[in-house]
Length: 129
Image 1 (cartoon, one colour):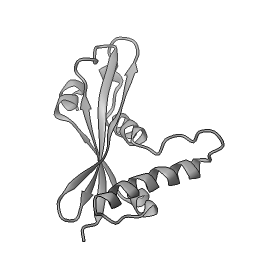
Image 2 (image 1 turned 60 degrees about the vertical axis):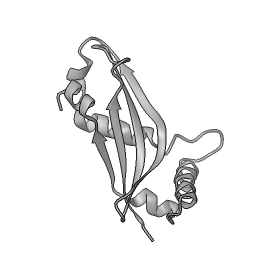
Image 3 (image 1 turned 135 degrees about the vertical axis):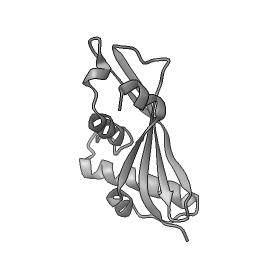
Image 4 (image 1 turned 90 degrees about the vertical axis):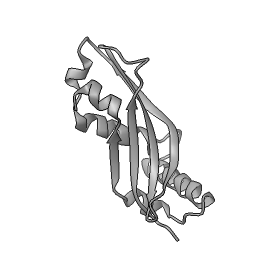
């Protein structure tokens, strides 16, 4: 039975929305498995940021990696929810998603995994990373 060995967020530039004043990227979270497969956990994430001209000059690889980890969750708590409850719900939903695909994982185990960020070729070229 394969197990999840790490999480990987793939980040790529949205060239249609990126300018000298705005950066727009997509983010896809995957679980890498011990048998070499990668299962998509979230494919509807991303972010944009804007500012004065020269936005790429203010970006760092570390800031993009931090933003990528943030946008794939856990989300901020809402309503009466605590930060811990929001995190538990997030990791639990990902564990349930994996279970439906035949992979056993628990929420706490997923939260403790290494989380790599893979910057796409177009993003690296645009940002000069």
